[in-house]
Length: 318
Image (cartoon, rainbow, N blue to C red; front, side, top):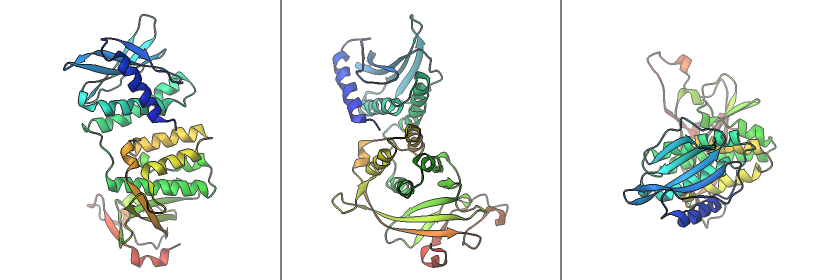
């Protein structure tokens, strides 16, 4: 992953040069398949309106505006297109700069303009989901813990010899698949629970409802102080996997997209919460495993959420 902080510093540096010049624009000094500019798009409530602008040969249309960002795609006199993201709420300035840097970093590795624009669209869509909440919309601590567990499994999968591209491709949880990981040799449902927890929650029929034999993996994870041995932040786990994918551009791009689908944006706040992975329990999910299945439930039951007593699952422990 590119250094997002470097891009953000560049955006802020160039913005200071044009902040007081209406309709002033300046190109960012970065290497990228797209030409990026920051522009002062007039005033919004007496405050200079910040705008991130792409100049491209290809239009990027049908970009939906969010609560605090207005989007536009206009053809210029030279036949090229100006694609703009303009901040309309001055209170969201820090988020806007972070978003701009993140979108640039996310699309930087593309080999051609059209691919880069496709990545811009995908990343902005992820940001829309956050911005429409009117705040940074950080993942909850429990959601962070759940994502941490999935990434821990992904990291272990690569470390144990599965090809990085195959490992990332099989992480299908963020794409709303029934299980978190599906590979040719089996499926895996990953759960995170506390060190002292006596149960684990199954959120739907589908998570364990599969005819093929699979695996339930329970990570015992707790929040901890950064100084604790083995402690790692969610951001640290994210970037540890990036390091493992540095030689595989397609896998890295796929990984970035799946993080976005999972609701993860590389906010600095994710550096602050540390986790300690104490233990992992693996259970064989076969025809005898205790679970609720849709085909055996009354037709009146549309879905189910239930808890498994971990102390009673020793017969299926791997």
